[in-house]
Length: 181
Image (cartoon, rainbow, N blue to C red; front, side):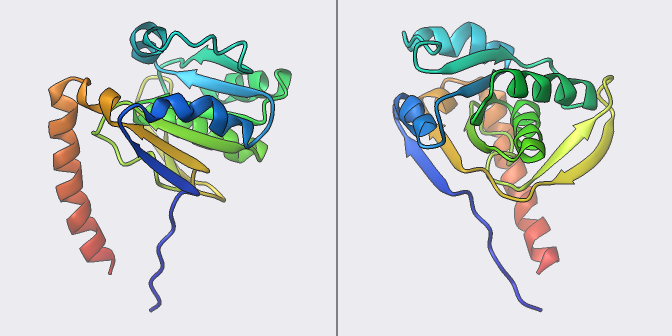
């Protein structure tokens, strides 16, 4: 059995790297849509002082569940705005929603995780749920994210429980990978 590794196009990590977001978007086109979790829209984005609209980035609030209703709403918005790249900024469900929508429409996705408790940022698969939050299915994308942008300032300012959850997830992933090999 052959083994292979699949990675995102770019993985950028460090303090303040969020400031590279607008320039990264320009690599993929003129119009970007940033799908933001509520904490991103209310707490993180206002701290940057960037006028995202002037930079060609439309900010859209995530509906809360990675489900077909939210995916249909998002794909309509992407089509209306003639979006070239979507940015998923938040936790796992926000990121997964952006990845699936990008895959369905054949556009690039940039992932900006805000917590360390998920392995959604780099993977080429995403989980969908019912509108009520029950697991529905795993969907595999044709490509992994074009860019994963991890600003360590954002991650370290997230609630501690997310860092602890990430450590648990990392330990579980080791066993998962070992059983797969």
